[in-house]
Amino acid sequence: MMPTTMPDVDLVDPDSFADGVPHGLFDWLRREEPVHHHPHPETEGFWVISRAEDVAAISKDTKTFSSYEKGVFLEEDTVLPLDFFRQSLLVMDPPDHTRLRRAIARRFTPKTIRDLEPRIRQITSDVVDEVIERGSCDFSIDVAAQLPLAMICELMGVPHEDREQVFAWANKISSFDDPSVRADIDDGLIAFEESYIYAIELAEKRLAEPQDDLISVLAQPESGGEEPLSEIEIANFFQLLAVAGNETTRHTTSHGMQALMDHPDQRQELIMDPALMGNAVEEILRWGSVVNYFRRTPMRDIELHDKTLRKGDAVAIYYCSANRDESEFPEPHTFDIHRSFSNQYAFGGGGPHFCLGAPLARMQLRVMFETLLDRIPDATNAGAVTRLRSNWMNGIEHMPIEFTPADRLNA
Image (cartoon, rainbow, N blue to C red; front, side):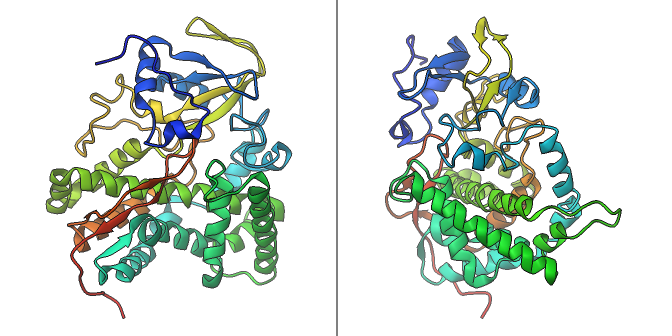
C-alpha cells in the first residue's frame, strides 16, 4: 500500500542505501512529486527527477542540461576535482563529447564486440574453473569481478600481472562513499593519478610498438587520415573503461545471480530454455540498475511539472527510479525474465551519453549466465551479503554462495 506521506529518506546519506535502493521513496515521488527539491548539508540542495520520461528527456537535451558545467555528482569534487574530471568523456558536453565519442566508436564497433565472444567464453570458463571444485566462493569477488576485469584489461592491452592493480584503482575511484574501500578523497585522487600515469605510459608503448589491442588502435591514425587520439584522451578513456566497464558489469552480475537464486523457478526456466537469456539479461540490468543517478546542471531556467529549475541548480536524474517506473514496467518490483522490453535505463536515459560499452556488457552478462547455469545451476546463498556503502552505485561487495562441486574443464 502506497504511503500517504513522503517517506523520510535522506538520499544524500549513503546509509539510506544500506539495504538497497529506497524504492518506497521513489515510488511516492513518481506518483506525488516527480520533481522534488531535496536538501543537502553542504549545498543549496538538488532536484530529484524520478519519472522515466523525464529522465529520458533530460538525458537527451544536453544543450539545456549540462554534464560539463558542474560535473555528474551531487558534490562537484566527489570523485576528483572537477577540473580533472572534465577531461573525461563522461563529463564532456557536445561538441567536444561528440568528437571524442565518434573517434572512439569508430574503433569500438559492433563487429569488434562480436569478434570478442570466443575469448569472453574462454575467460568465463576459466573463471568458473577457479571456483568449481571448491563448492563455494565469494561470488562478487571470485566470479563477478573477474570477467569484466580480464576483458577490459585484454581490450586495452594491460599485462596480466597488472590486472589486480587496475581493479584496485577502479574500486577506489568509484567507491567514494565506502570507507572500507576508500579512506578519503585523497585516496581516490591518488588512485586516479596513478592509473592516469599508467595509461599514458601504456599509450606511449603502444604508439612505439603497436599490438593487437584497443590502446594500439586508438593511438594510430585512421586510414582516412584522421588524427589519432592524444595520450591524454586515451588515458581518460582507459579510466572510463576501467570504472564504467568494470565495476558496473561486476555489480550487475552479482545482482543477477542474487535474483536468480531468489527466483529458482525462473532460473530453472532459463536452464531449460536458453533462448530466454537475451530477455533475462535486460531484466537483470533493469532489476539491478547499478548506477543510481547522475547530475545535470540547467544552463537556463526551465519549468518542469510546475517547478522552476534555475540556471546552475543541481538536477539528479535517478535511473534506479526510472527502471521501476510503473508507466513503463508493469509490476516493476517483480523480477520477471518474460517481461516485454522496449527500453531500460541501466545504460542511461538515451542521448549522447548512452553507454558506449552497452553491447560489450550485454555480451559478457549473457555468456556469464549461460556458463553459470550450465556449470553451477544449484547455487544458493551461504552467508550475509555485504553491500557497497554508496548513494551513487548500487553495488554488492561480497556475496558468499555454495553449490555442488564439479570438475574443472581446463587444466
